[in-house]
Length: 83
Ligand SMILES: [Zn+2]
Image (tube, rainbow, N blue to C red; front, side, top):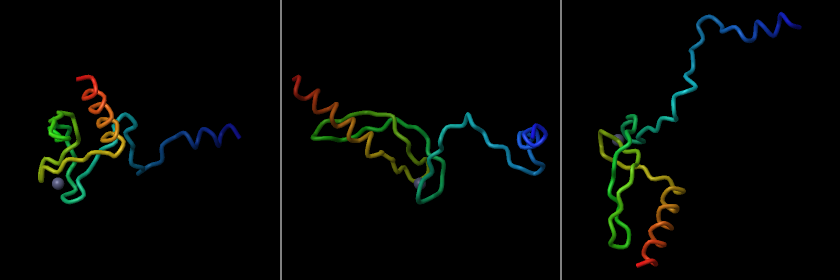
């Protein structure tokens, strides 16, 4: 049994090594380019908000996850109420 465990741990020849430390890379749906994090100005209810978002360097499309958008919008609404 011990010998089998050791064989499993050893990397097989020809196997592609994965990079566990690499963060999840977003790709553009259109050009298949890797997205780069970029400071983008969003427009919400007449207010401009700058936020770091993944954007395509080729076509300029900005990707906003639903969670991020909703979270950010809540933050803005609270800021408006304070004024
Ligand atoms: Zn693109």
